[in-house]
Image (tube, rainbow, N blue to C red; front, side, top):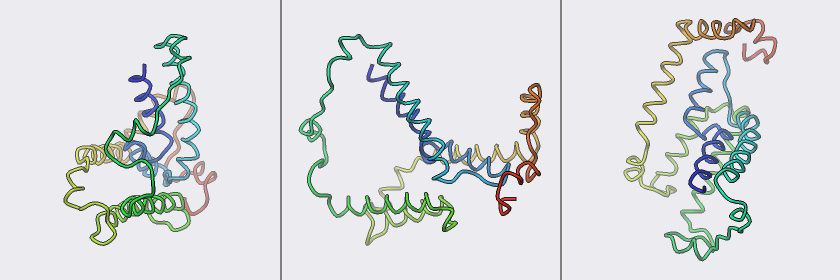
Length: 207
């Protein structure tokens, strides 16, 4: 039951953040290519977090209902700090210097992501800058040669290929053709780029 609950909640809660999955970034870029503006970190959080909370809780309750007995659900789950401290790593006490630097860097990065509308710096540039700071000789908490092997290069290549395919579908008109074919029976037509419908619903600078 727990083996089903944990991955289910992890997958459903990922929609709460723009960086919860690589597909979210690809989606934002494709939307930006199609209509002129994508999703920033705070906008995605505002739209995705409620869905993540509701779907995660409902899925967890459903898994518990289907794969556990009533007497099992009455048993309280207690996880003690002493049990967790048997694993490598410190869980209690003050943060080390490296941990404090990492926490500060994470907080600054998230704040910069959420305030993209104020400073106009792309989230990818912010993330790259944070990665360089994290691996810098003076402030860094990990060496660059140790961090590079941990980068999911296959995922990055997949995201780049997906973005290229998405742009090809938009530029060739194939995406519009498929959308009109799917939604045409409902009388819904997809708006063209920078159309009057889009410009009437967005600030002038986005048109």
